[in-house]
Structures are given as C-alpha cells and as structure tokens.
Length: 196
Image 1 (cartoon, rainbow, N blue to C red):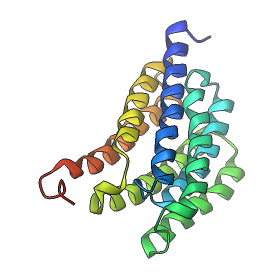
Image 2 (image 1 turned 30 degrees about the horizontal axis):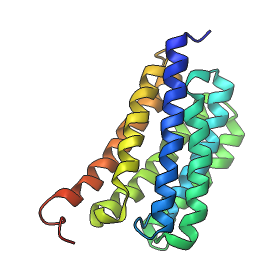
Image 3 (image 1 turned 90 degrees about the vertical axis):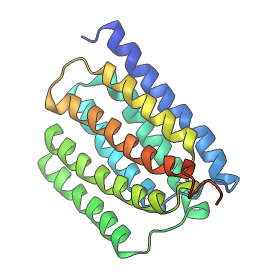
C-alpha cells in the first residue's frame, strides 16, 4: 500500500512533467524550439512500454510520470513532424530501428523486468539522439522544459516506495537522462554560444 508521502510525490512528479509539455509545445509551434523528431517518436514507444510495465509491476506511486511520458511525447512527436528536424541520418535511423526491434522482444517475454530493461535501452537511444543534437545546437532546445523535467525526476525519486531494481531503476535513470540533456542545453549559456 502506498504511503501518502510517496503518492503525493508521484502525483507532483507526474503533474510537473505533464505541465512542462505545455510551454514546450508552445515553444515548438512558435518556432523557438527545434526538437529532434526521432527522440520523441522513440520516447512515445518507450512510454508505452514503461506505462504498461509499471502498471503490471504494481509501481502505482510513479505511474503519473509514466502516463505523462506517454501523452507528452506523443503530442511533441506529432508537432515534431511539422516543426522538428532530423530523423534521416544513420545514427538516428539506427536508434529508431533499435526501438522498433525492442517491441517484439518485449511482447515475447511479457514480463515487467524485460520491459524495464528494454525500456531503459530504448530510452537511452532517444537520450543519445537528443544529446547529440542539443550538444551541437543548444539554442534549439527549451531550457525551462528540461529544468522542469529534472525537477519532476527528483520528485519521482521520492515517490519510489520500494527500492528494488524493477521499481527504482527507471526513476534513477530518468534523473540521469534528463540531467544529461539539461547539461547539453546549458551549453547555450557558455560564452561561445551565448551570441548565436
């Protein structure tokens, strides 16, 4: 049974991460954010795997973030088809192919542990694409969004009731992945990038 503290932290994490998508989407439509298409398509696939595995593993305290990681990336992926860029180089195509190949493996094993391992791999592919793109062009990403995603990831850590590998590993990984992207976005504040 979840404690009130863990449940509140999970709800806050889910709310922050979902609300963060609103200004991010507005920034995309206004042409201020030029995001990587493939990352958001992969994150939608990963979100579906994650949400399903969390539902079946009983990690309900952190399910709010999982739901926001299905809906938010799906909306951004749709916007990215019109306003985003990329998706055509070998690295991005390879990452996308890897995410698609994970689906039949996940379906075959039908276990929350296998889903978690596959999801970590798939998400790593998306983070890799986003970091590569953002490292080269830090101005193309929305700084407030990634700050909020890191904050949501911290709240999500506090939502973890049972520190076992299947329950806690994704929450820890999300903090690391979102922080890595935020570090790439922060390059825009370096003197070399601040005037571009």
